[in-house]
Amino acid sequence: MSFSLLKRLRRNHYTQAIGRRSGKSSRLNQWFKWLSPGLFVKRWMVISAGGMILATLGLAIWTKMTPVFYLLRLTEAVLSGLAQLVPNTISGPLVVIGGILLILWGQSQTVNSISQVLRPPGDEELVDMLMNHRRLHRGPKIVALGGGTGLSTLLRGLKLYSANITAIVTVADDGGSSGRLRRELGVQPPGDIRNCLAALGDEEKLLTELFQYRFKTGDGLAGHSFGNLFLTAMSEVTGDLEQAIAASSHVLAVRGQVLPATLEDVYLWAEMEDGRRIEGESRIPEARGKIVKIGCVPESPPALPAAIAAIEEADYIIVGPGSLYTSVIPNLLVPEIVEAIAKKRVPRIYVCNIMTEPGETDSYTVSDHIRAIDRVVKRRLFDAVLVHKRPPSEAALMRYAKQRSHPVFLDREDVARLGYRMVMSNVMDEDAIAHKVRHDSHQLAKVLLRWYSRVRSL
Image 1 (cartoon, one colour):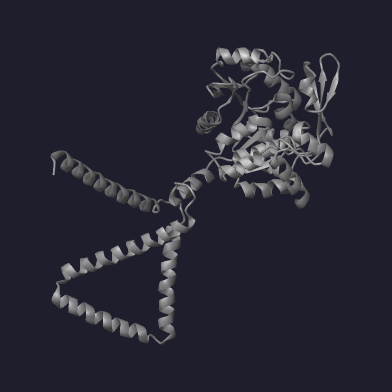
Image 2 (cartoon, rainbow, N blue to C red; image 1 turned 60 degrees about the horizontal axis):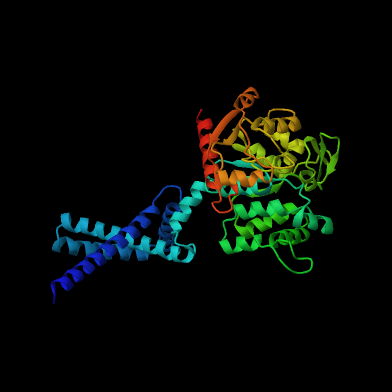
């Protein structure tokens, strides 16, 4: 046998030995994780063992202690024999060690059997899933208000830090698939709700993609998403949109809950600087004018009681991001929601958009966004504003300039005069090919939770 072949065989043997040791170490580490506090596993095992002991004692009492008597006689004889053969200083520790080993072996096999049945379909171990579940359910109670893609982007990041999330979503949409369903079937627009459910969903990717699937052909189907049709059908089956959302949340294993701001049939209107009155959420940006006033019909829609309850229990309230006049402000046209937020003495922050929106916020600065909200609610509703710090690339700026869209300018002095704290961070994600910009869901959630922790500690 050549020296190189011998060397290779030794290396393979060494690698296999290391692999076996690392595999055993990994299994041992996974087993010890079951001893972590708060998993609610050890206590039930102890209770089960106690139940077995009690059942055995009860059986013995029932049979007038005869089995116990003979068992004690047998135990005495065995222990006497062992004491004569092996000194008690040796036999005692050996029996204790043997008992402990049997207990550990039995418990480990029990845990392995449970894990094989309940283990999630990925690479994640069951114990890791339980620990992650505990961490998320200990997270802060967060209420996020908005609509459109902005809110769903935020939720996608927040669900990594807490399972106690409530998304309060506008129901003023009257364009696209949602608008068609609203006009033809008289249902509330499901589009923004569908996006939020998909963002908070913890189910497998295929099911979420199915919920977001949009039909491209077919009479009456083209343009509709499967999720919109599903929510519409569920509304008919369950009786209202709130119950339909709850049922859909179970299907998608949603972390938290998604709630409409109101169950009223709400339509937006806006008055322009040139005197025009534009009706309909989808027509407001198309009017290409400066908005001086915005409202809805009916004028003061009642809030969903569950939404008010969520705000009252919240540890943290986030407004935005999203289209200022057609996604964020519509939620604040519900007086009860505004009152509930105003009463809360918890951290409250507004996430400002990165770019201006043609037909809505042309040439708006950060303070202009804040003033627009203050005019609607007639008070100061939040404590701070989150602003993106770094401008987009030159290619992105040129692309957006063609659409009459520009970065939202931070006018620090005006924001400070309004009494708001400024939280500045790089929370933008830019598509390197299409040069589209939007908030980075993970970074945005990370910054928001960091600010929350800092404020709570103070």
